[in-house]
Length: 162
View 1 (cartoon, rainbow, N blue to C red):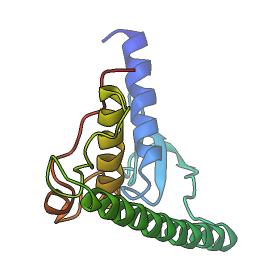
View 2: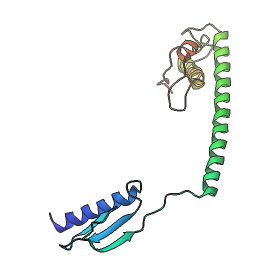
View 3: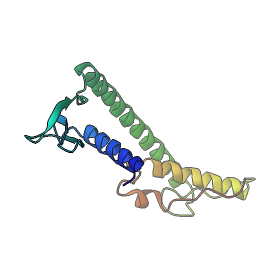
View 4: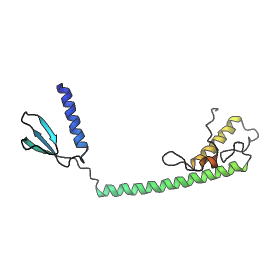
């Protein structure tokens, strides 16, 4: 083993031990009979020059913990408000889509093309109605709630036209 590789391995070992304090609550550094330096949670009886290595503390102060809990509660309330708004938008989109002649079926279907409306504008409107409906069923993990397909119909792709 080259000296450089040994140093890299030794540093990696020390960082690994320091990064996981659950492995050992107290870390000892000692030198063996051959002059080799070791780190462990229990030094052997014949070890020379045993020293306790200070361990970093991972305790969170009570004030920081309370502030984090307050922020988390505010975030949960905001997410609930956003979900309520999304559901209202989806219901509105579903109601407006169901009001016309739905050409695609489901709530994502849009009324027929309006007089003077270009094909691109019609496809864009269909896409926006689909996105609004599906948005009301989106979960925090990126999935969708049950009933989205039945309520919204198949999702629309954004139109390629400008």
